[in-house]
Length: 298
Ligand code: GRG
Image (cartoon, rainbow, N blue to C red; front, side, top):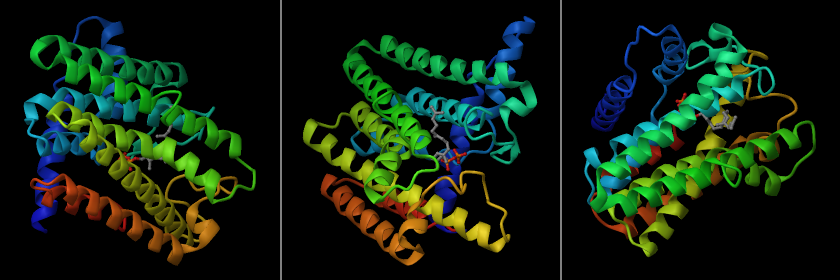
């Protein structure tokens, strides 16, 4: 295993441990029920990309792990809520997620909706708690929480999901596809990087660069996901890796072919890495992480 993978697994593992600490056992059967459903999806084996990005961008600007941990956990809660809701029968109607039956298959639709809602609210509770605990850095924490709220809400990830649903079954071009990808996938990745940078102390100019890095990595990440779906479908003769690949959804490899899509991924990653270098500091791990995320084969 490469040095990078060892480091990444250690950081993701640390995040797993931390996420587990947010839930306490209770004798109250109602509390126990919602906690169980939240924890089921949150502690399943996700890649923990967003919390690791948040943490690393915080450190790049001089912050510590302790400064960023609650926000890192919170962004993973928001990501997990979006997956639970996306899997519901009213949306993608998926049976499997993170190698397990989806939340609504195990707990029922009503509880799955509530578990998603609860994770979303718990995320903001934890972010605000952190802001209140550290008055000296309250401004940074509130700014970071605002970025996360904006980029995951009706001008960010949710907007992307709405656009995606509205485009189902329609013939769309690259411009519309970029709009969907930018918001649905790119905005939360961007928010993770920007929130980390703000907590670490980035100034306005640096934050603008981080936003551009997030945009490019988020877009590249979605194209990779679509190529992997297409390749696994071809390999399995009609069985998609996840049901994200559906006939009614347009993707980059469907529109432009795999070779051009891979060229676009490389252009975006190269651009992100050159902006990262402009930020200065020790960027080696982040550079390797971008390459891992955008040149992965599974
Ligand atoms: C329902 C509000 C709402 C939003 C849904 C995130 C999302 C928007 C839908 C999930 C489906 C999907 C394929 C989204 C594109 C982004 C993406 C590739 C998500 C998967 O992220 P990973 O690969 O997943 O980081 P893990 O499980 O590793 O965390």
